Image 1 (cartoon, helix red, strand yellow):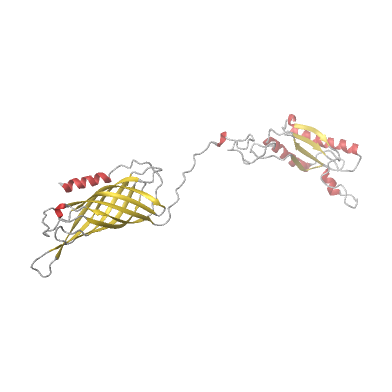
Image 2: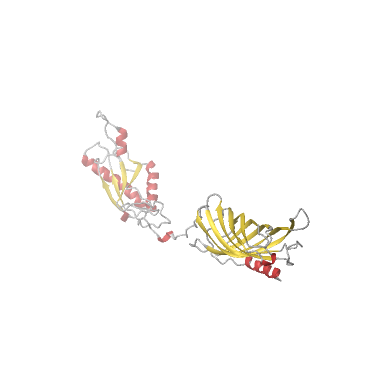
Length: 363
């Protein structure tokens, strides 16, 4: 009857539901070494005795650990001082009631194993007395304890329980007819984890709705902002990137003393139309320039006519006149290349670059 009750209790302990919340845990293998006291069943007619054990194990979830343990005891028979040596191996499952932020936690333990008993007995008048008799069989244990960490590479548990030895006395003459003995025990065990603890994995942060955020305050939400570090006062396009303060219409140059658009300028102006269409908030000044040949008065009028030619092209291709300032002529006052060489001779290439138009951003 005792055997049936003990087995039922063991199955119940190992079937506890995992109710503790999921958390990170130390899954390193560890070795154990423990010592305690075993209170021998009175029916065995032996004295209580110290108990030693060694083993190894690990946690396989935040709450469950498994151990393999070897133990030994050497009690004396009462009144005879003969030994009854006990050796065993046990496969133990522990359910730990771990809680986040708590270092020490209680647990329940259940184990199944194999126990061997070697008893000395007197066989008078045999001259070889005392002799030994062996018996072995199933061993079951149930208990509870407290376990915690004392550092990165050491832990400890204190446990109390009862071990059932179903080896019996095998007719050894101990004076008991029991088929099982029940030995309470208390033991303290040190745990030595092997290797370094794995770093806990930080869960990925919850996704943030970037469409409602504008970190740099440029009016473009973070989802669409390709230049998140833009500065205050810059002209910003719909992609969040600063736009050039001057759209240089390189290639829109004019023949000497002419204000008519050359065929090769059309592609450049079409690109300018595309840029202005991409950034509908931009306002630009249409500016015309000349080289230094001729009088300042004449060049001023010529630059205005050149600016007018570009202005008319832009408005004729869908750019609202309200976005355009000018046309403005600057004559020969703002060259971008030298009109003459250092020796004073004419520089045709420089003058060609100065015969130009520009779109200067106003906002």
